[in-house]
Length: 215
Image 1 (cartoon, one colour):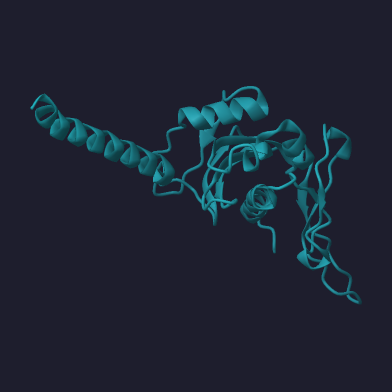
Image 2: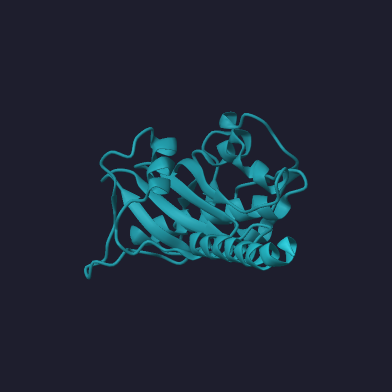
């Protein structure tokens, strides 16, 4: 008799808890900041990349809305450096929420992962310093072609390969990508590795567009 009385409310409580958890997870995954306020996650990301978040402000359009680009949720700047908030697909759709920091020269200063939804023990290894370090110094470049030559595609190039602390399996995106960059992907996590590469390229492309560059 006791079990019959206690079981229905217990089941209902569990259903409510599960539902609330799913709602919170969905909110975290889809929330976009439109207020111009720098969130705690962004502050932590800026601090990881630059050592401080002091002086950084979110860039806004003339109408007060947050400035965005394709794939870029927000852009923060201290007047010299620029940090791009990017959500990219890895093995999981939208599984990589990162902040890509660029220096005053337009090269990658560092990458901070704010949220990751990749496979534990595999895709989550893209958080390792050895993997992220390979993007340091990469920048977006175009070469102006002469009258007698074909236009040269924009490309991402190495800054200093010596900054890589450890190497993973070599993975190349091929010559048809137009890139001079070769990614060292995490073994067994190609999709997550490519997702991080795409996130960095997205930030570099947005920076280029901000500065009036051509594709």
